[in-house]
Amino acid sequence: MAQVSGNTDTRQGILDTAHRIVGAKGFSGVGLNEILAAAGVPKGSFYHYFGSKEAFGEALLADYFEEYLADIDATLAETGLSHAERLMNYWHKWQATQGSIDYQRKCLAVKLAAEVSDLSEPMRLALKAGTAGIIARVAGTIQAGVAEGSLTVEGEPHDTAEILYHLWLGASLMAKIERTDAPFDAAMRTTRRILNPHRA
Image (tube, rainbow, N blue to C red; front, top):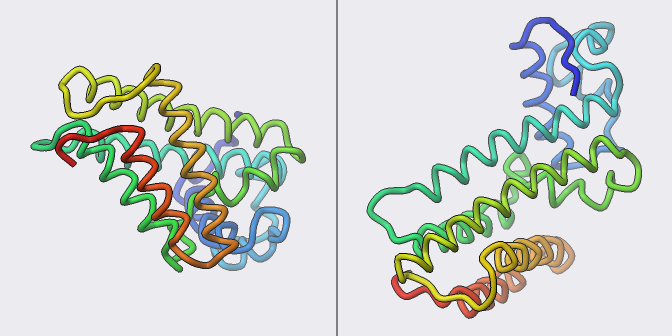
């Protein structure tokens, strides 16, 4: 992904503002003018930082996943807990953020996956790379949890991680449709059955 040189604080400010607005309205439903006005950036300077709206969307997703993966790393490395407990904490945090009305904290993967995957190949690939990073981290923690004896799974850790991520992605979508936490509660019960956590 190409990055135009310029004031990185301004560029990051545009992205931070876009996280909130796009998280609430989607990508296609938001005009650049709205984002730039909210960020306090002149319209003419947008293309100094991003070559197009599609390039901007790609940068937005890359920025989102960079922060998200750092948060996952912190959660899955928390000291004093078993790997099973760390994993269950991750799912609890997922439910807390996706069930929140604070759109700024919503997962852009959930919000944009269906919307942009058929419209923009660069954005689809950014989503693919980001979600692959999430699954890889969950898989590594599952493998470590099996090794330490804090959880028991059937099948390969990576396959299990994919199943769990798909489960929670679907639960997030259904929670939006139903406007209730019931899909998350069901996902949590299924997650416990799949992972069999012994100390979580």
